[in-house]
Image: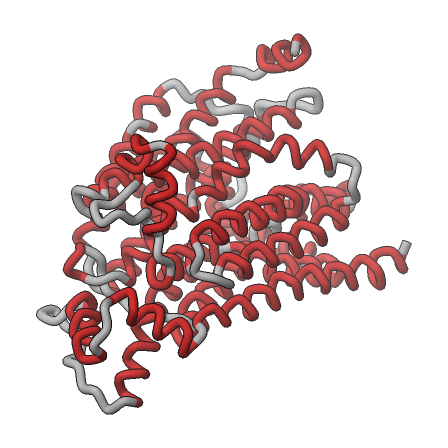
Length: 481
C-alpha cells in the first residue's frame, strides 16, 4: 500500500486533470451511445427515430469506424497546433453536436450529426492517451494506465445509468445531459498544462504524408497485417454489445420476471431502474458488462499476468464469443445476465492484451509506428459490426421484419408505417388481426422463426477469430522462432 501511495504522489497534476476530463467525456459519450441502437430503431411515438436495422447499422458502424480511424490524422493536428487548443475544439464539437442531435430526426440528418460528433471524439482520443503516456514513466506507467482504463469504465458504467433516468422525461433529455457533462470539461481544461510536446516544423500536409508513409511501412509486415485482420474479426463480434444486444433484448426478452425478482429483494432499486409497466430497460442489462469490468478486471489481470499475450487473446476471444452468442441464445433475462458475465471475462482476458502484444512484436525502432496502427482493427471491426447488426440481424432476427413477412405469408394487410401510423400502431394492429396479445405474438414469432439463430453468426465470427489466432500462433509465430 505504501508503494502504491508513493507512486500516486509521483503523478503530476496534469495526469489527474486528463483523467478527470476522460471521465466526463466517457460519461457523456456512453450516456447516449449505449441507448443509441434502440433510439434509432424504436417507434417514433415514444420519441425514437423509427429507422430500419440496416440504417442503424450504417450510422453506428460507419460513424464509430471513422471515430477510430481519424486519430491517425488528428494526432498529427494536436502535435502541430497544441493539445489544449485541439481539446477546446473537441469539446466545442461535442457540445454543439449533442445539442443538435435531438433536432436530427431523419436518417441523413442524424448520420451527419453523428459523424460530426465522431470528429470531436477523434480529436479528443489521441490527446488524452498521449497525456497519460507523457505524464508517466517506467515506474508509474502500469498503475497510471490501469487507473486510466478504470476511469474509462467508470464513465462507461455511470453514464448510461444516469442517462436512463432521463429517458423518463424524453430521449431528447439524454442528449442535453451529454452536452452538460461534456461542458464540465471547459473549466477543467483551464487548469490543463500541456505535457512536453515535440513541435514539428514540417508543413501539415507533409506531416500527414509521413504518417501514411509510416503506416505503409508497418503494414508491409505481412505477419502484422494478418494479426490486425484477425483482431478486426474479434472487434466486429465485441461491438454487438452496443449494436445488437440492446435491440434483441428490447424486441424479444420479457423482463417482467427480472423486475419482480429484484422488486422482491430490493424495491428501491426497481423504483430507480424499473419502468411503470413493470419491466427493466434493455440498456440496464447490457450496461452490466461495464460493472463486471470495474469489479473484476484487476482480479482477472492478476490471474493471467504470466500468460503469453497470444494465449490470453485466444482464450479471451473464444470466451467472449461464447458469452456473446449465449446472450442471444434464449429470451431469459437471467440467462442473459449470466452470459454477459461470461462475455465480460473474455473481454477482460483478451482485449487489454492486444495493445501489449503489438508493443512486443514491433521492432524496437518502430514501436510508436506499430502502435499507431492499433486502432485500424477497431475501425474495420466497427464497419463489419454495423453490417452484422444491420443487414444480418435485420434479415434473421428483427422482430418487425419477421412480423411483416409473417403477415404477408398469411395474406393479412396492415397499413405501412408512416408519420401517422407508427411502429406501435403496426404492432397493435397486427396483434389484433392475429387475435394475439403482444406477449403472445412475440412468443409466436420466436418459436416460429427462431430469431436466436443469430447466435450462430456471432459464435462463428468470434470463435473463428480465436481459431485463426491459434493457427497464427502455431504455424506463423512459433515456426518462425
